[in-house]
Length: 339
Image 1 (cartoon, rainbow, N blue to C red):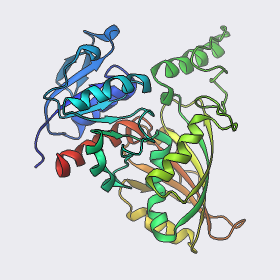
Image 2 (cartoon, rainbow, N blue to C red):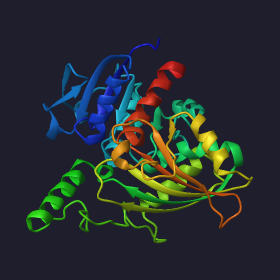
Image 3 (cartoon, helix red, strand yellow):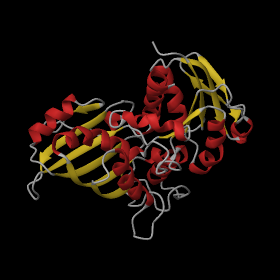
Image 4 (cartoon, one colour):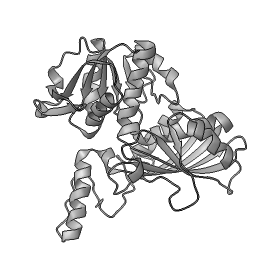
């Protein structure tokens, strides 16, 4: 039995923060006490922890982290930059869901099914980074295949739900969709382009080489988590889906690997569910993955255009495995094996 830990959730009023609280309760995480934190604008708001507990949100800026064992954070990179070192100095291990610390060489970037041993490096800064949502689901599916045949190159196109951009983005998709049907004017506040009935081939800001920062994240995070030798090319696209990221992934291997061998390896892999039948209901879409913990893999097939190539369709709930669940799994390993 795991010992109890005192937990703080930063960004508790946001979509991921609320999912973190929900996931902690659903998994019967051994909580001593749990504290909900957010900006001063949210102080006094109530959030749920399980079915019977309501927490009042406290002010992050004024909170003393002494006595808190683990902090789960999802409140934006600038906020993490400001508060995480303060929490760490008070003896609290911060599991940060933002991009700020991910590529810091002294901060482990962890997906428990892929590189759990990396957690041990948390002592350098008392911070562990949660990877990008689209990276998490991809490396969970790629890890057993890499172990089997060694991945050389990955080409991925993502179809990412609006919830990855926060609650306001979900509201914008809803209001724009309704506006189309009632012939109202469409308002654009979160996305520069219309998202309802459209796709947007830009997630995060553009970089000097023409890639977006989201695409860069997938490249560098995959290398840090899985293998620095792997070459990655990514195109990240926002689609009018509320919850659930999808990815079309092409993988080139050093060794020969058949679709059957890949399917068998994925069926044995922790955190992966294979649904791969060649008929109209034989694959998973975002609608089916919403609310589920697994990374779902479908459409496993050999790529005849390249030696030792496979194509995969990977789908996962971006708020759960792509964010909240992965953070909670890290926390579970922390108290079981490290703290």
